[in-house]
Image (cartoon, rainbow, N blue to C red):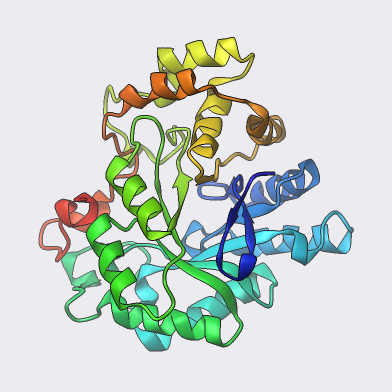
Length: 317
């Protein structure tokens, strides 16, 4: 399994199982199947609404001797309503309780967006807290304390653009080691990719298959589907692979982590086998021109009328 090197020589498995949109009643079996198949990286978040079930699957897998805790890399995230410094540790403690763990391998600030305490998704502009009132740096300092206390081994961010990540790298005592962002051949993020490599920050690609099962409110009529791209299909045929495997392999060949989601045992296993699909330089060159700047998860929920957040603030690089 390809790994990424983090601080203290920790090795993060580059291919993991994503759990966003994995429904209760399904994610337990998905995690167990994944660990049995050879996955050693599980990506979680409290906003996914399934961490307790993921925790039961982890505990069962540890008890059954399928894997030990030290074998598995577990990532989770701080939700937007817990950015106040006094709320950061309780949020983590709830995640640890749900996952039945003593510590996380990686903890990410889920979005550079602050919401009022108790707000899952905003219903009105009054649910937001402007970053001028609750700066990222204040939240980050509380996350650094989690590392100091041994509750988290590594910390990072998610959905950060270049300016926000640059500012945090300049200010942080413990530098963010990861930025988890949407990436696939239709959204290749070249400026962030170059910046992260220059500054020593790893990237994790979420929605690497185009998130065709995301909520209907996030979809646009007639939008391009990366899984159906003819160039991807042609490369897949040459390698006796599926388009999904090519998309996952593309992320791995860029030296990024990638977390495809599935609850279907056959797909879970096929996604893991993508690590064995050896794309050529010619394949990578053929995929490069496919970039459309297409977000399948565009963050529009944060930019409703009257919100202190704007779309250009999210994605301008």
